[in-house]
Image 1 (cartoon, rainbow, N blue to C red):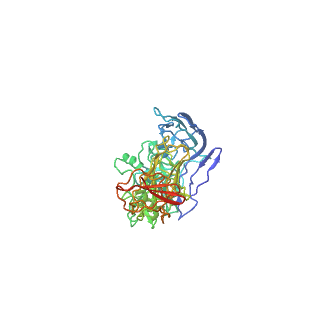
Image 2 (image 1 turned 90 degrees about the vertical axis):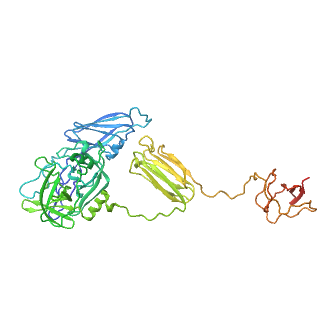
Image 3 (image 1 turned 45 degrees about the horizontal axis):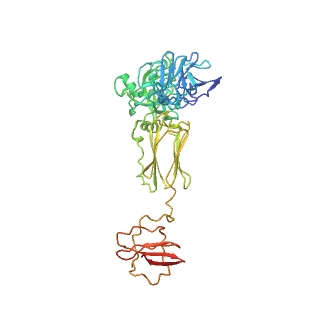
Length: 578
């Protein structure tokens, strides 16, 4: 498929999806319908306030979709978008779930009203509405939605209107459900953007807001590799009005749990006696891009591709290839190749290895199971653990853990992509002093203006930051130490008297005082004589060092006089107390 570059006209650029692929593969053409969708630049900024009102209009727009990706709504605030036929109400969370874009609202004008919270004290936390662009359902240069990429297998178009709740219109293609929120389209239909919506409707107009679904663009996988290697699969976000998943809502329409999505089946081993149905949103002379269906022969197959002869046109790309005899989907339609005289249309088999693996991953199949990780090795240093609850704007949050002793960042995290989600971050780091710094790029912290975010930190098994979250652009916490306590001797004397006395206490005063100090002198010395004698007999020898002019009193047991030792002139003077 070839995409034309957006053409500029004033402040407008129009996206035209190609009518016909310029790459021919086995005489097949990619079948994407032209989408009349024009993007207009806009510059509305309400600034920080609690209430605001503005209008966006465009003559003969058909529908309008607003780019609100820079809008921030305070807790309790809501944005009401009112069109000619419907309205949409958004809060901070639902706006994020829509990837920052409104749904496509029918009409030529939308009134945008910001309504601040009532009875809720939010201090200085106000809302700010920014509309940087909007899209309309208009074409430039006289383009139209006529029949394109026609691949009618015979003289006449035999498709008939249908109302299959499992299929929807997405851009210039068709998409269909295979689970509560998983959908399939053709890879050449392009990677969905923030503004992409799948419309579950049977007619030609936009679906009601309750039937429009945004795509979780991070979940999408797709390949545009030609016949047999052309597929796309992704997950849809819950509806902004009902909060329901697409498959659940569609199943309510058909009345049975699970009837709102297709069952995937095995490709028959032979084409003989088998038929194929293709249901989708192809262009037509009447009710172009409404849902239509047709059954034709199963023509041929390879290890990766299917060929069949139901009628298709541009817009059918992405349609389910249904085995009529079982009702199961066995592939995705991608290319046209039929004519009045022969040929066949083509699609990718559902069991094509890459395609099947991507589908299994989203549906929770075998291939989605994580590879078992090795048994974790216990941390031999110090454990750091951060428990972080993100606010409504997780993409603004980052953090670092810096070693103040050796230098360098030992761990870091963010930005995050899931609002209101608890993340547990752990690291095994050397013992030391650390500084933890958490940042918010918008400058409003993670609590409590736009969500109730928080964080706590444990280090070496103890809580060092029990709770945090309210700050502006950054805040830091320091904990731990760079080494063991100093080894220098204490300068204060012991509070208790020594409990050990010399091994042989004298019974009579010595006739000659000792003139030499002990051979080995201890490193600790009291500066004040203790006043309480020991209550137990000595069991070992203790050596003390005395400085010039200092006195040591040794309290003796029984009737033995206490012994005083004084340093004078570098010699010991030993006396009994009188």
